[in-house]
Length: 342
Image (cartoon, rainbow, N blue to C red; front, side, top):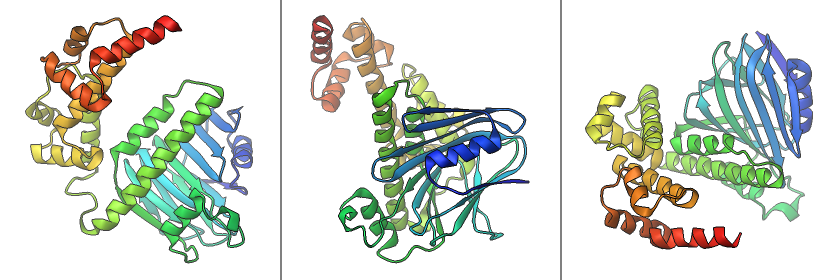
């Protein structure tokens, strides 16, 4: 097993050290660093970006050719780290402890450190790992001017005014965060627009992680319901299927056959991961697709309605108005006016 020691938690310094150890190509766009690897050590990319206020985002989408550990040190005011695994699994330990904490696919985790403690991340060879870390810098007692900021509020929420200890909280499964990370990966814009979109999505992911932690505390005895990891992955696959084929007439029984889940487990998974029923999720996906078609194509309203699987234009108009506070025709007319004046 190979160990990489990172002496700095600052994104710029961290990526310089990663580049020196792993090779590959390092691209820097404003404050975003992307290290791309395709060599004898592994394949994939590591991405990091820092925002104002002391919040950083770090993403591993890697498959290493050998077992790897990455050790990072912490400053005196150790940050709070919010973790999410959207693919594979990753293990962690504090300092030189033999006990490893494992974050599985779709799970959330929250990490706090004692002053000057170190963290060790374990990557298993030939396993594609997709892990995201949001690192929130804590506020020292003498930084009174910063005590109204997001960092301090998160610090108070997680630490309750007490000194940080070496603790890791492994939370429930959550698909909403996976959706936000997928949107983050899909950003094609450049420059300041890209930076703003990334920052907005990172804050959304952070909010969902905090909410998941709050929900878990309220449901300690049943954090993940009765579903196991395989069943949660099946729910994710069905969610993706619905998203990719909104025009299909999908019944609960068909989705159960496709997923291998019972109706109760399928509904439980959608409620847990999306906060809604299967039927409502399908409807929301269709409405979102309809809005996209109205905005970006020349299809008339009736063509949009039938292309996304609705059979009643009046029903479609009703739920579209409920969501967007205008009729589909009014929305399309506004798009046409904007296009004509551009």
